[in-house]
Length: 222
Ligand code: AMP
Image (tube, rainbow, N blue to C red; front, side, top):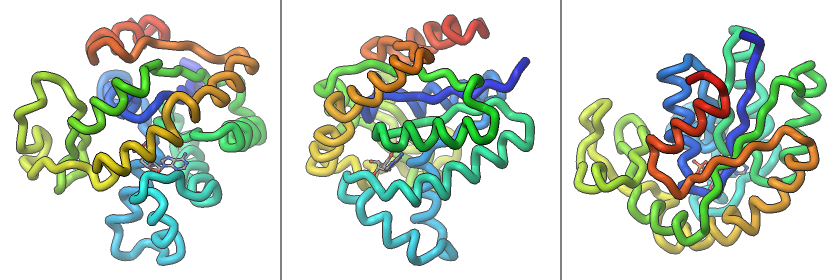
C-alpha cells in the first residue's frame, strides 16, 4: 500500500481519538495525537521546562502555541514516516494557520498527495454532553469515550488504573474549549480543506461502531 496520512478533524469529543486507536489496533496505523503529546509532556518530569510552561493554556481550555505543536508533531511524523508507517493524525490542526503550516510541511517532505482529511461532524451540544461524561485513566492516560456501556466503569480496561475526569474536561474548561474549538472554530478549517479537494465528512452523531463502518468504507479497508 502507498503511504497514507489521515488527518482527523472534528469538534472535541467527536471521536477522533477513539477511531484513531481503532485504526492503530486493526490496521497498523501510527496514531499521532497532539493532545496526547501535550499530556505526555505534562507528565514527563524531565520535559523541557519552557515547553511545560506553555501547557497552562491547555489546562485552561485554550489552544497552546503553534510553535509547540509544530515542534512536537512534525518530529513525530518524521519518525513514523522513516519507519514506513501509515499515519493517523488526531486533532493536530485547530486553526487555518496550522492547516497551512502542516500542508507546507507535507509539501516539503513530498507527502502532500498522501493526505486525506476526514471530519467527524457533530453539533456543539452533543460535544458538550460527551465531554462531560467521558473519563481518562489516571495511570496510563487511556481515554474512555462516553457510551452507555462505559458510563458505570470506574477502572481502566487496559491497566486496571482508576478512571477520572480529564483536567480539561471540567465544565468551565469544556465551555471555553467548545467556544474556541467547537463548530465556529472548525468551520474555517473545513472550508480550507474543502477548497483543497481532499475533504471527506463522516457523521459523528452516530455510535462508535457506525462511525468505524463508515470510516472503513471511506478508506476502502473493509
Ligand atoms: P485533545 O486531546 O485533542 O482534546 O487536546 C487537548 C488540548 O490540547 C486542547 O484543548 C488544546 O488545549 C491542546 N491542543 C491539542 N492539539 C492542539 C493544536 N493542534 N493546537 C493547539 N492546541 C492543541
